[in-house]
Amino acid sequence: GGDAEGGDAEDAESDSSGVDDADHSSDEADPAPGLDNIIDILLAGDQVPGSRQDWMMHTYSSFVRQRQRQQRAEQLVMRPRIAVLRRIPFVVPFNDRVRLFHALINRDRARLGIPPIGRVNGPSPFDAHTAAHAVVRRGNVFNDGFSALFPALSGKPARTRPVGAAAGSGLLPGTGSDASPARVPFPDRDMMFPVRPPGPSQVRDLFEESPDFFRMPMMDEIGSRIRSPISQRDMFKYRIQISFVDEHGMPEAGVDGGGVFKEFLTSLVREAFDPRMGLFCATRSNSIYPDPDSVLGDDEHRRLVLEKYKFLGAVIGKALYEGVLVDAPFALFFLGYCVGKLPEFNDLPTLDEDLYRGLVALKNYPTGARAGAAAASKRGGGDGGEGDEDDEIYKIFGLDFTTTVGLRGGQTKTVPLVPRGDTIRVTSHNRLLYLDLVAQHKLVKQIGAQVRAFVAGLHTVIPENWLRLLFASPLELSRLLCGDAGVIDVADWQRNTLYSGAFGDQGRNHPTVQAFWSVVEHELSEAQRRELCRFATSCERPPLLGFAELNPQFCISGTSHANEDGSSIETRLPSASTCVNLLKLPAYRSRQVLHDKLVTAIDSHAGFDLS
Image 1 (cartoon, one colour):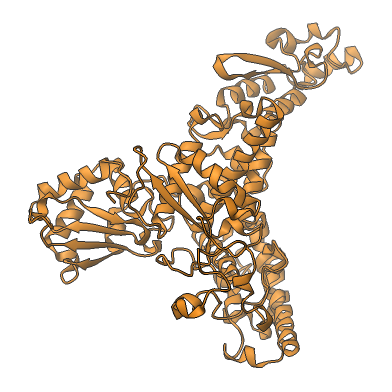
Image 2 (image 1 turned 180 degrees about the vertical axis):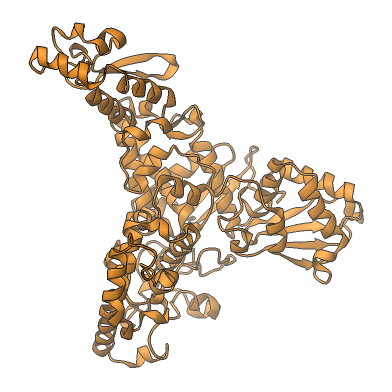
């Protein structure tokens, strides 16, 4: 981060010219010599020149002047590097952009007083980071979650807080601003305030979404973080506590330290994006996009459905904000909206490959421009009216300016692409217009309202600028959201595992640990390995950058004592604490018993009473 000092301003012009010369020959200097350090420079806001304790000793005005001078110098250095990200983001490795994305989220979390991604805090009587609480039933996670949490998108947490929560404070019962601070342990109080002022606003113009994005916690604000209500814009970014109820109506035993919420996110996504729910439908390649028919009905039905789309957009944003991977195979044309890319004709294969092939055949039919031009010349330009029946394209394809859309129940309906489209024939000279109108209808018009609601919800949590700047394509956003679809790297998993309990001394050399990894690598199917990952971490896919990025680090804790009833430990099943990525593995003596118990645990799909 030290690159951002004022002395580097002298190099700004050379850096900027380097970006402009990016296409020159390799004989010249590296076109963007600062790219290797771009992450450090962008994140230099976590550092303050001089002693970090000195800033509070300055007067407010002198401190502001110092910061402004530094910001001007830093912006001179930043602009050429930001230009690279804006114009050709792919020159920065994808993994580096993911790290930058996570760092930007952590900066925003620091602004709100929320612990960084992956930081685990146990239940606390001073949990000022909790905005809402929801009780959801297994099998009805989406509807219960929507009913309980959608008000949070409007800044109305009263319906979602536990009974007795302090109104307007965002705190749990008994911990409002009038509660005695002596009742709260000092570490919990300390977590309410940043350990240093937010860094310089050299990225203000690029990433700012609200006026106080880089607002400094000056002395007159001390205490306001406790007294002030959570802002509407930020409500969904705060912690949401979840309690599950099983199919028998009994509360599950898990305490939400983070893992239960991750389970809630993944379960909600699995339910909501199932085509049987009626909000999304699947292409032949099983990618999903909004169901065009979902908003059909009266005004009240339409309003409710669009609220659900907005809620789902916010849920996806929340997953990104919390670093949780979800299984949501969105169609790429749909994800394009999230990064500011409007779909076009060449995106049609991601929706309907058969339709695309048919339209390409129409476009490339060999009568070509000569026949079309000749026909147009005879008609004086023609508009698809009378006389076009002699056009070769019309005689072969017999199309007009309408398209057929599918309805629920297998029915179809013909809709005009333009007014009186059923009277306008597709000919050699207007077929390109027809292709464009079909693509726009399929990709834009028929799902426009749903897309706008979904994207609005997403951008409530994740600023649009972040996605547009850091991710060059919908495919990259899909990878960020869902992770890599490849097989789990067991060797990487093993390298990044800690050991405790009965395994603490011997670690990976313990016989049970060796048997465990052998079973995972050689005897479990890929589906079972993913279920094991979900069982222990609440997500079936490993972190995008590998298990080294799992936070907290994956740990296997060995238990060797007998059961309370005196029975052998061989009868116990493995269990897990997903909020800390901890697998609790009995020290089985038999490899076969280990295999059988592990498979039983991961195949049970049990809730938190087991895990």
